Length: 104
Image (cartoon, rainbow, N blue to C red):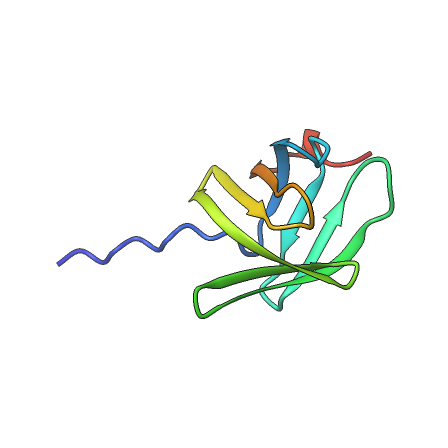
C-alpha cells in the first residue's frame, strides 16, 4: 500500500497576494507554525498578528481584532480565503511568493 501524500499546507510558507477585493497585490502573508501571523508590504511596516485552526474553524487576529476565515481552496500553488470582516467579506488569492515579489 502506497503512503498517502501529505495534504497541502499553508503553514511556514511565504504567500503573496495575487488578487483581492481589499488587499494590495504583492502583500505578503506568513502563517508560522507557532500561530504567529506576519504581514508585510512594500508601502508599510510589517504587522504581527496571530492565527488558529482548531475544531474545523480558522481565525486570524489582526490589530487585536479576530476574524473568522473560510478556506476556499488550498493547493501547493494557490491559497484562497475569505475573511469575515465587518462589512464586505475580504477575499484573497495567495500564491507562493518569489524573490521578485518581496517588498523592497
